[in-house]
Image 1 (cartoon, rainbow, N blue to C red):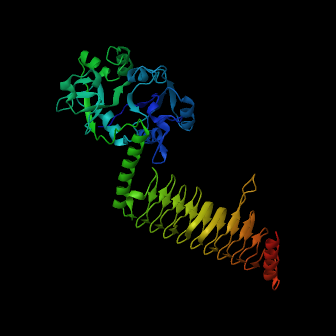
Image 2 (cartoon, rainbow, N blue to C red):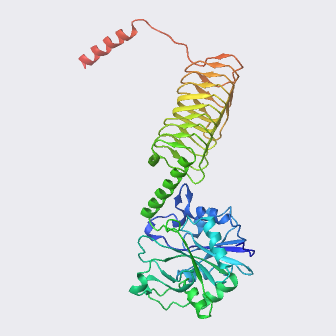
Length: 452
């Protein structure tokens, strides 16, 4: 059902996160290379909310920095008196808003855009519920709040675990905490919530029973336990990272990627892989990586912020840093690092090389041990290597410098000036040889050692 009303979102992130034992705010701990809060907001963005309010407690400065590029308001909950009290803190930020309000949790990062849409749509069902609640059925209901509902999803009662009877605790339909409520209903209902319960807190779910007391029913829709898994500790963070990675690996293979040892490959939230890509064991994809069709990523390679064109080969033991661009059928081999540099079609850097702030022309060959000396301690400079150029092993190219098309740089050279096309450049000291010098030196030193 299409929802014609404007949408706002309130994201609760005021918890102290003490179980994380971290100076970093809990919701800023990363999952798949992105803060869990930002994962959630990325899904929310698909619904184009008019307003988004993040409710914070401690660590406000960290959240302000993380959200600096987003049109997101912050509301402060101090002290923390429960989820109902937390949502109340967003009232001022939503002043004058008329529409639907989606209530989310910053430490529940994997709620999909589709589930958010379903939750809002349920608010506009034919029965016109006062509140739409997202429920789930975990394998171990543990201490979650329970939802008692009929087969149509109409809620008879919601109760926190601490306040539930043994009969109610036996029910396996649990409350995720996520809700959709009309703005005109939300804050008047919250104003009536009390803390007369076992925890002495103001519970958000109490608005369901307050609406029922007014003769208005509420409804529940369900999703998987995996989608609403909360993260409160480093152990849970690792568990959810692994679960996400397992889903992403399966997706990659279903889309035509070969993973030799899937359990050893780690993706980021935005990793893009083409068809017939082969990924060998122990490969790490940081944020911002695009791999085109037919690429081979060999074992123990680390890629971040890189674009690899079709048919290229990376590794083993290669590192592609942000700004690395590998052209079609190019090759970056073992123990090669590339940063903010572009390799043209068929260019090769096979071993033990650093290429930074550089443009490498098509078909160029970079010998083992070559370094682009791009930094003088204050500024970065670029190196340009022309098409078909050959850079001999163990060369240092002191930027800014240009090597012309087809030029050859002799092994062991230090190049400080531009090299014209098709020229040979040598930048090394002349070799001298002194006959019998080594034997005389050894004899003299052995005699000295005996006399000491």
